[in-house]
Structures are given as structure tokens and as C-alpha cells.
Amino acid sequence: MSTDQKARSGPLESDDPVAEAQAALSGFLKEVKGFQDDMRIRMQNQEERLTMLKTRSFAGRHALATTAAEEAPHQKAFAAYLRSGDDDGLRGLALEGKALNTAVAAEGGYLVDPETSETIRGVLRATASIRQIANVVNVDASSFDVLVDHTEMGSGWATETASLSETATPQIDRISIPLHELSALPKASQRLLDDTAFDIESWLAHRIADKFARAEATAFVSGDGVDKPTGFLTHPKVANGSWAWGALGYVATGADGDFAALNAADAVVDLVYALGAEYRANASFVMNSKTAGAVRKMKDADGRFLWSDGLAAGEPARLMGYPVLIAEDMPDIASGAYAVAFGDFTNGYTIAERPDLRVLRDPFSAKPHVLFYASKRVGGDVSDFAAIKLLKFAAS
Image 1 (tube, rainbow, N blue to C red):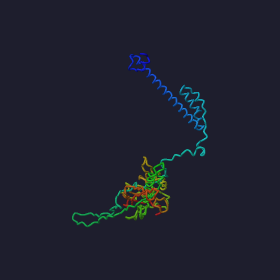
Image 2: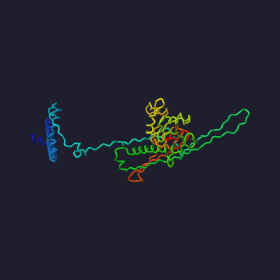
Image 3: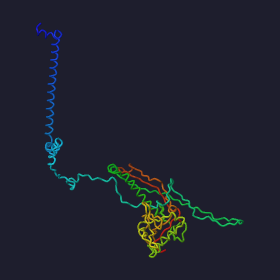
Image 4: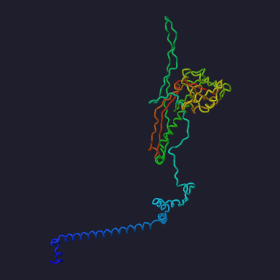
């Protein structure tokens, strides 16, 4: 059989297995080579496409951007330093000065946003109140009644055989302290609440509480009792020598609108001892800053100051050994003014209140504004007229 006839007859007709293996391997190698050539052509086409896309991308960019990408001496210098440690390029770089700055508003100052404080600073105002030394009670009703026994029970000496006679019975007075409503109704727009950088609702609540504290402090001193607490200075005042229940006793300084020219401190001493001994143990002075400035200059007969500052932090100053409360709502020294009070305010003045400050947020009644309705109920009045004495700046 010839060679051509064997090839045409196929592998089944071959009698040589080695030749058959060689023919199969040769065909496999041809297929692999064809596959490699095909992959090489495809990769070459892909690279050409990527190159074309890059060229188009750089061609479409702004000239300044292309120049910046190609001419970046600081990048080249930094790359050289990282690769070989050569820092000559970095040393030779020239710093460029920019035309924009924040000093001139038109040259960049407008572009710098100011930073707003997270809180609003407020002017400090005095909120000291006789609440600190008065009797404060929490109630759930609309008023608070104080029962006061201010009369004496009769008594007498008895003998072994004599009959006893009836003695006087003490009388009880009722002092009713109604609660009055202190309210505020500020409003703010919803956009302001949403966009501000700080918590404006907390700020409003703090401001309301501060204002309420100052309003009630004024009422406890000079309130007329009409829709507000009754201040202790509102009650009738009589000379201490003719004092009777229902009025406050006073001691005169001996000079109209001032302390006496001679022995000015005697008026303060007389005020202290005008108060009964049972009240003096827990008594305090109440005056404003201007009066305190005049009183603290006083000296006794031996040249010692009657006023002494507190030795520890938070301890009040003392006048003749008694603590002094600086309440700016007290009147200034003037003709006929009752500028200094001295007494046991825990027994002498009672404050009744609801224990909470209510704040109601109302976003519906005044759209697009939000109303903040804050309210507090508080009342106050003198509960023991014998526990408070006043210093009157008058001749008598």
C-alpha cells in the first residue's frame, strides 16, 4: 500500500501507532499556535483602542490642565527624591505667591465662611432673690394657706385651794397665698429652627427661665398682689415702737435719705435688736449693691468694720455676724426709702409654687412660625409679720 493510500485510509487503517501519535500532537500544536496568534492580535487591537481614547481625552482637556499635567516640577522632584533620594530638585523649587488672599474681601475674603458660636452669649443679669432665704413650698392646688398662731395663751399663778379662772385662748389667723401665672410667648420661624447652627429651642428655654426668675424676684420684694405675688415691702409699715400684727416694724436712721452724720452704725445696731431674739438666730440682711457699698464702710466705736466678707467660696458676706443677701430689687438709699431689711425670712415670708416650668411647643397656631408658650405658677406673701424689720432712711 502506498503512503498516500495510508493517509487517506485514516488512523484506524494505520499499522504504526507512533506515527499516529506524532500526527495528533502536530495537529494540537497547530491549534495552540493559532490560538496564540489570535490572542496576540486581539490584545494589540485593544491597546490601540486605549491609546486612541487617551489621545482623545487629553485633546479635549483645557490647555491649562494639559500643561499642569505635563509640567509639574514639584511632582518630578518629589518622584526623584522617592526613587533615588535626590533632594536637589526639591531644594530648587520656587514657591509661587497667590493673588487671592483673605485680607481683601474682593480678593477672596468673601469666600471664607465665618464660624458662628454654638451658643449665644447673654448679658449677665442679677437673679438673686429672697427665695434663697424664704420658706418655699410646692403645692398642687391653686392656693396655699398658712395658719399662724400669733397671740398668747393666758396663764396665772394658782394656789392650792383657790379656784382657777378662765384664761385667754390663742387665736389662729389664716394667711392665704394664691398662685399666679407667670407666662411668656416667644416665637421663631421654622426655617430658623431648621437652619441655625445652635440649639435655639434650648436657648429660648434658658432665656425664659432666666426672665421668670428675675420677674418673681421683683414681685417677692415689691409685688402688689394683683396677678402677682405680694412683696413684703407692700405691706403697711409702722415705727417699731408701735408695731402691731399686720404691719412691718421699722427703725429710722435719724437722717432723711441717709445715715446719721454721727454714729451712723447705731441705726444698724438698733435694727438688729428690734427683731426678737427668737428670730435673730436665723436672720439675714437684705439690700442691694449700692446700699451694701455704703454699709460696708461703717465702723464701730473701736474702729472695726461691721462688714466682713465670706472666708470660703460661696459663703455670703456678713454684717454684724449675720449673712447679707444682695438683692438688686431692693430700693436704693433715698428719702423715706426702706432700703435695708433684716429678719428671719424662713418664718417671715412663704413662697408657694408649682414645681415645674411648662414649655408648650405650638407649630400650628402661627404658621410658618413656632410658638413657645411657657408658664409657671407661683405666689408669695408675708407669713409672720414679727419676723421682718426694716430700716427707714428718714429722721423718724
